[in-house]
Length: 385
Length: 224
Image (cartoon, rainbow over all chains, first blue to last red; front, side):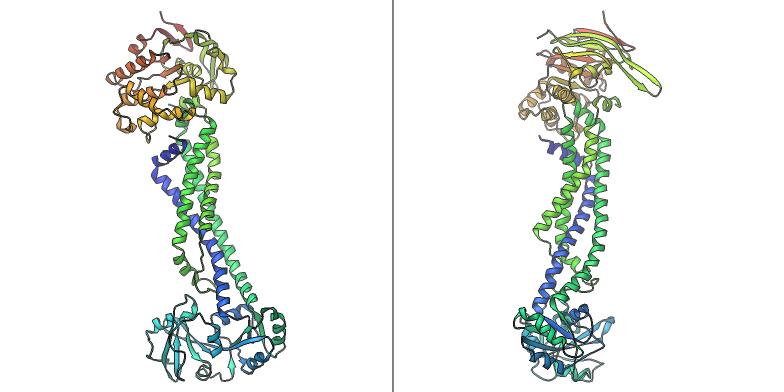
């Protein structure tokens, strides 16, 4: 038998209390695990999205970096449009490899949703080689391509006709995109001229996405584009940083809530161990009688708290990892900007870090109870018999 | 080495309870020879248990000296006293103090754990067999009778082969039927190279001792 066995058996004596303490620690650990996973996963998913977009600069009319990012990645309706000739001017600037013209429009749909229409050109498709299509991109003038989710919601397959009450023409579904996990799954894609026609925005664009031949030329190209009239240029890095900054403020709030959860868990462990030490005062007196040193009682209590905290930490971290997809869905609706793919990346090092952190905090919470147990005076403890 | 295993010289112990000062042990001097079986009797509140705790290094006197094997234990620091309790002293208490989640065998092994004795299992089995519990090794206290629990406690007191065992009312929680095997176990084990000091109300137990003392109002007198 070892002190660990003794600590373990003592915890088994009060299973309900032990389990409740473990649950408290587990909840705090799961939250911590999710926040750490989110911190890492969100930035990674966002960078992945920007890399996939293949756009180094986004040109629109006056606006801000956040608006530009939303337009570039997820689409959105803007009150002001860019003259289409700007795209041709941008294309002529040395160092510009691709300049893709985009028109985004939203129509109200059932259930208060917005149906996002994306008018795109061939260059846009060339920038998105990761998009897999069943069927074809626009074989006819009335063709429409649906994102995976849009196809599900509208219950349309390739070859089906589709009509929109706010537009004066029907379309034929020529292709359905494979699911990406991003918001683009919900979009409907039209050839740019068709989109400009049906939305009565001939000669107008929401923006121009620019890919450079050499990223080193970015400052020079950006300066040249900014010299054009009525344009607002933002780099993908600016968009990325802007989004991360915005989400960073939400993260501060989440961290504050988490700090409270961790404090409650630590107090829970402290409370449990203090109750346990008070209840076991006579027992500790007896242990001292039969030769237990103060150090051994200290270790015994620290082992008990560490077992509780480690079990809670590990359970919470693993639970957080298991529930990450569920949390991902929950967070997606609350964030100002949700990238495609998983936003919560809980890796083994995070699980290990959280479990270790819980163990250390548990041990810290156990210090005072352990000190009290170690201070037991055998004669006094037995006098209360 | 002196033939007396334990010697008390003018030991006093008092407690403050509110405004009242209680003189639990007054000027007690005593010498206990090696392998002696000593019983201390007396009415409740006479100071027997306090005296036993002082002799067993669980408490320190306000005055006087306690010598164990000639060594003044009142001069030892806490860690030395702890080591001494772990290796040279055994205790049996009225309320058994068995750990409910440990088996009989594991309970016997507890003092060995604290003493750092990792090879106590065979000794624990042997001791449990000596008190007639060889078939109850893996039973938990909840599955044992009161008498069986106290026999486990007796075996536990002897696991580190102490030179002296202190028993505080070892049959106090038992009826006469259960008490008999406990008394037999205690005395048969004490026949070895062991000194036994008992505090008891049980006359039969006291009668079996070689030497009997009576404690009254904190003072100890030898029983004729």
